[in-house]
Image (cartoon, rainbow, N blue to C red; front, side, top):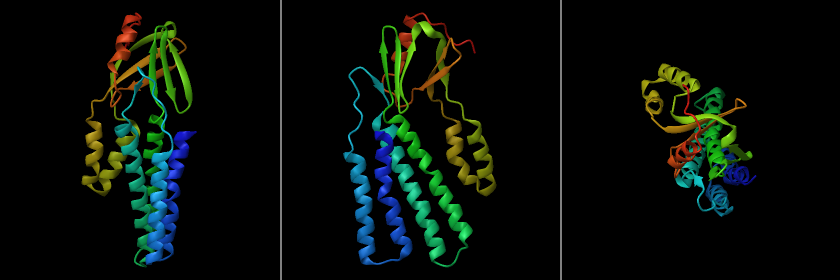
Amino acid sequence: MIPILRRLVLFSGLFPAISLHISGSGGVRVLISLALILFGLAGYWLIPWPPHPEGSLRYSRTRGVIIPDLLGYGLCGFFLILGAAAVSGGGAPASVSLFLGAFGILSLSINGIAAWYEPYRIEIYPEGIIRYTILGRNTLEFADMEEAGRIRYDMPEWMKWSAALAALVSWRSTVPLLVQKGRKDPGFRIRMKNGKVYTIWGTALKGFETIEKAVTRAGIPGLSQ
């Protein structure tokens, strides 16, 4: 799949560059590392982006895909290089390197989110809604909907636990999580008659309000709770 391939190419230059950094320093190694990183970044941009037909709703490519990708890429490289430098300098135990490396790998989850939003789009037609994701096409017929309505973002449990654990290390590390907790992102939840529930988040989704208008016109009852 193209979204996965794009991120494999992006990181194909980063990991070899870090390996060269770990193995030693020197002018030639630095040039090769930079060339590998530029190769990955160039491949990321040159791989064709998914088309978005006129009238479809999609997330902003800059906010939903490119910025998260670069953020995950930068954090991963930062933590991995920092971990390598801590050990190669001889002043830190291997456990520190493993700890920092784990944070670097966890940063890849941000790129996973970007991969999810890259092909994501919504198309509204008279009989229902078509949702395109990295997993394929999903059709939500109005006749199969039990109820639907707006919701607000709720901070997930895992993030609340992360905030509590971060507070044990430093109160400053809780600031981003507290900001996340206070977010009021709009969403639209659809509950089907077969029990399945679908949520469409409105942040950075161009034309989000048209989903609610289409469902209202179809006479779908609002959410019971």
